[in-house]
Length: 267
Length: 157
Image (cartoon, rainbow over all chains, first blue to last red; front, side, top):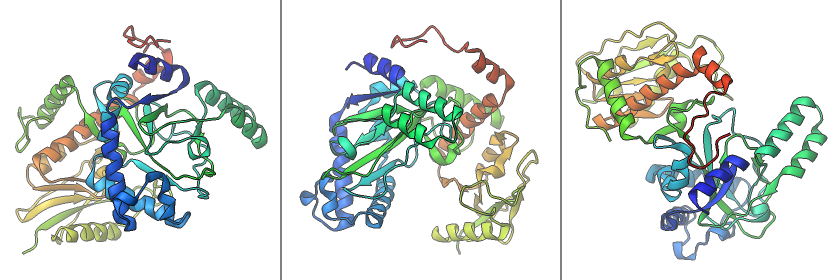
C-alpha cells in the first residue's frame, strides 16, 4: 500500500495496517526485547521465542510483573518511541507533519494464553487528545484472540450515539459493539495505526501462543491537548527548521537578552 | 561536602489531589521528604530553607543562595501562572544553578541541552494551552473553517 493510500484509509476508517518502511529497525527492536526478557527470566536469548514466552512465565501476577520489569528496562536503555516512529516514518509523518511529540513511556503488553487480564473496551480520547495516533506494534504475528479488536470510525460513532440515547441499556450496547467489532490480523513487521477516538480492546487470548506488543502514541506538537499532563506523558521527538527558529526566537524574547547563557545550539 | 539543593514545595489549593487514586494532596512536609529522598540518590542533601509556591496567578519568589547546586520543584505547577508556565523564571533559575528538576513530572535538566529540551516543551505547551482556552480558537473549531486546501492524500472532507 502506498503512503497516500494508507493516509486515505486512515481517514476513512480511522485506522490502517501498514508494513514497516524499515523492517530492519523492527528486527533490531525485537532483538533488544528478547535480550532484556532473557535476562529477566534467566533463559539464554537463543532459546527464547517471543510467542513462546509463556513457557517461562506464569500467567496472572507473573505476567504482570514481567511486563512491568521489561518496560522499566527498555525505557531506561532505549528510545522505543523514536524506533517505532523510524520504522513507520512515512505514514506517521503524513499524519503528523514534522513537529512531533512522542509518548515518553510506551506501553508494553504481554498476553500469554489464558491470561485473565485482557484490555477492557475503551477509547483513548477524550482522556487523550483526539489529535493523537496510536501505533499498535506486535512483536509476534497476531491473529484471532491473540490480537485486539477495534471498531472503525463509523462503528465507534454508532455505538457512542447508541450509548448517549440509551445510557442504561448495557445489553443493547454490547450487542451493537459485537456487531461492529472486528479482530485485526497484524503480522510482525506491520503495525496497526489507529485514531485515539476509536473503541478498542482485547479478550482472553485463547490461542496457543503469547502476544508481545507495544502501543505508543504520537501527537503533533501544536495540536490541542487531552486531559493528560503533557509534561509527564510526552516528549518532543522532532521539530521542523521553522519551529526551531520560532523556539529560538521565543527563548531570546522571554529572556530578554538576545541569547541565553548556557544554551547549546538547537538540536 | 554534599551538594545542596533548594526544594520548592507546592501549596495545593484543595485538599483533594487531582491525581486519580490518591486521596489527598501531599502535604508540604511530605513533599520535602520526597524531594529529600530524590537528592539523596544523587549524593546530595537539602538546604535548611524551602520555597513555597502557591500557583495560580501568584508569582513565585525564589532566592537562591551561592551554596545551592540545584533547585528541585515538587511539580512544574510551581512555575504556573494562570494557564501559562513562567518560562522567564525557569530561565532565570537555570542561569544560577547546575540542576533544575521537577519531581512529579520526572524531568531533570542537568546540562544545557536537557534544559533547552525542557524549555522547548514549556514554550510549546504554553502556546498550545493559551490557544486552546481562547474563545477565538473555540469559534474557529466550531465554525469548521479549519479545512484548508492542502490535502496530499485526497482526504479533505
